[in-house]
Length: 524
Image (cartoon, rainbow, N blue to C red; front, side, top):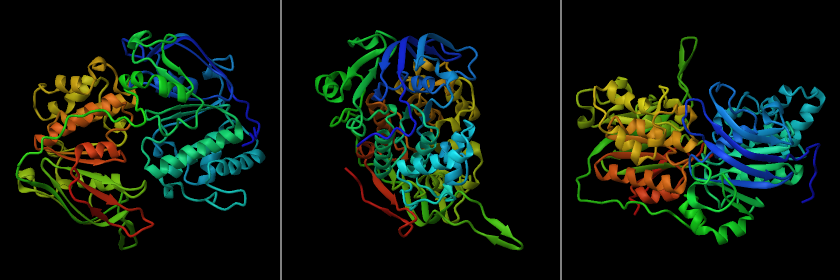
């Protein structure tokens, strides 16, 4: 396709011996990086969890270290020959979570937000908004598609990610940075976002750097793969410049260095890492939680005069059993209410209709309705890992985060060291949780819940941000918990993860089709 620049000047990136240490950390997140990215290049940035990929993207976006007075930078990192922090609008960053990037309540206003903050003349802004929405496929040149006043709250996850991309494009950056933009999306949403990115690059010619753990989605869109060293410069035993393990065209890197990529924990097409097999015994099945004809919503009832108006449910008439030693996977398209149902099942939201009931054994005198339990009672019986790890952090140190639950329950610290080792967090035990990589934050959020020994574990997207090695360790650990009798409920789009845990699947359909869920039988 012929490139139409639309006033976009593609950016160049140069790193020389660049490194960054977050405030409060004894070791740098990335060090000794030498890297050149030419104008208009499309680069897929790979590396194990914790290798500094997101740190590099945030630095290129000029947002790294704004609140880190004690941080330390080495070497130089330049965009078009200048430090990124002084170039507002030259780079645009799209992150993992679709929800966190929506700023305003109407589609047109949200796309215009960035351009307005760059003081783009008003008469140019709405032209840019329309072009950007066309580029990401939310509108066509005839004006069909989403109206400018369409509520952003009514968009699916894939649409919200494309909306975030449109907001970036309206700023006309020369450098587009994507930090795992499809991590929380269903398969259809993944393709929507990838194809939208491809159209945008064809039409603008901008430089692209995309971070993803899974190669297959992006390998045909990029013209270069760069793999960061798994640790400090020179670690990992790989060839190449300091801080870089591999660098080259996708077909060359994937063909000639497949073994090295697998060893580094990269998700190589066709390879699924080995996990500990389930030990399916003859244990008698015990139901711990029952959902009976449940309707769910994030909204609360409202009043109009003397009338109480119930919220419109995302799902209704959903029934399922949560059983000891069994996995239950909640699947379905983005926007179907999977996370809302999981939070309701976990006792954190009250059902709009129907009942969530705990077994007498799980309730143990606390009442049969989990939503009515006190926090202290809930965390030791039903533990919940939220989709956004930061929503769970309450301290300033990883070890203290893991000790918080046990201390509230008057328990010892005996499991903390085991969890730190098994979930590969020992090297950051004294770090601030907010300075961890995305994958490390996810593993910490899981560990903080496991430290309280709940009998039911509810996980929302447990494997996002994980390289192949940490994915296998997490899946193996959860398999062991199942064998020990813990019930594991997961909201996920990860088919390989579902296959490892087995159990049953509850599929929730979107609002466009009849609501309610269907439960499949046991998976192998």
